[in-house]
Structures are given as structure tokens and as C-alpha cells.
Image 1 (cartoon, rainbow, N blue to C red):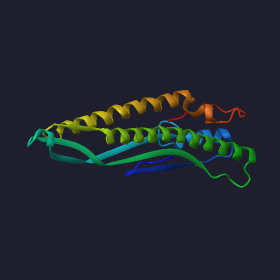
Image 2 (image 1 turned 90 degrees about the vertical axis):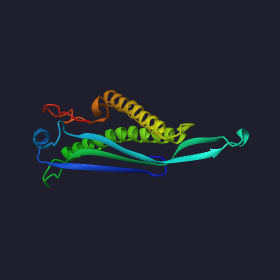
Image 3 (image 1 turned 30 degrees about the horizontal axis):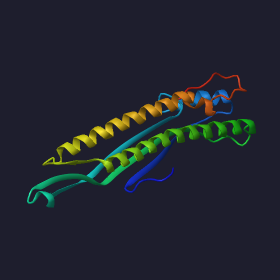
Image 4 (image 1 turned 90 degrees about the horizontal axis):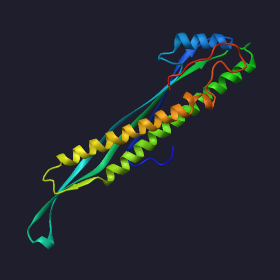
Length: 196
């Protein structure tokens, strides 16, 4: 996941739902019936953030007794929760080994695709943290302006990275270019869907 700034917490959660079957078609039908979402797998990220304000009243030596208000940000706290939903299958002992390999490749591809979504979310958090550290407003007499600027900065960056995430989803065709295809191309059952 790379370097995570101080006071940033990343919570990665995978939820599984059980599917059954002994053929690719049966597994596809089971995913269609059992999936908790609109597709067979999915990813979602949420962020909570906050900070402590450092409000100081400083005396400027060059201005004699004139005081200057300064409002800054410190102790930035961000929590990123990344959630994924992945189907889970426990094959019977007599199941064809090729089908087991194909399923493993499919679920590995789902997780690989999910890592791309997670990496976009982590980039968003790093960028937000870096920009909040730089944000400072002087001569405000209060910290209201700083709060508004911080909220606007976070909202703008969050939306920017949501666009990056949508572009990643489109470029990978929802993971299909990474192998998220079920049933496997060698089978004759109809293709699946995703919720990424």
C-alpha cells in the first residue's frame, strides 16, 4: 500500500457471499441469485477526516505592538475504509480441477481489480493529507475561513479522485481486461456482470 501519512488509518474489509455449483454455468446462476448487490462483486471506499485548529495571536516585532491572527491546521486525522464484495465457493471433492483453477483465477482477478480501486483511494487520501498540511490562512480574526477552505479542498480533491476511479473502471472494462470474466471463455455459459 506504500507509505501512509501519520494519523491516517486504512481499514480494508472483504465480505464474501457463498455460491454453489459444480459447473461454470451453475456457479454463474448461483452468483446471480446470491449476490447482495447489483453485480457479482463490488468495491466501495469511504473517508472520514478531521483536524485540530492551531489558532495563535502573534506580536509582530517589525510593527511594534500590532498583533496578527494566524489560524493553522495540525493533527490531521483521516480514516479510509475500503470495502470489497467477492463471491466464495467451496468445491466438492469430485469437482473438475480445471473448474477449480478457473474459479481461483477469476477471484484472484477480482481482487487484483479491487487493488486498483484501493490504490486510487489511497492516492486520494495522501493528496488530501498533503494539501491540508499546506493550508493555512492568516489575518482572519477567526478560523471560519480556514474551515471553509479545508472543506472545499477536501470536496474538490475527493471528486477529482472519484473521476480517476471511474476512469480506471472504464479502462479495465470493469476488470475484464484483468481477467474478471465468468464463465471462463472456454465455457459456453452466458457471460456475467460486475458491480465494481
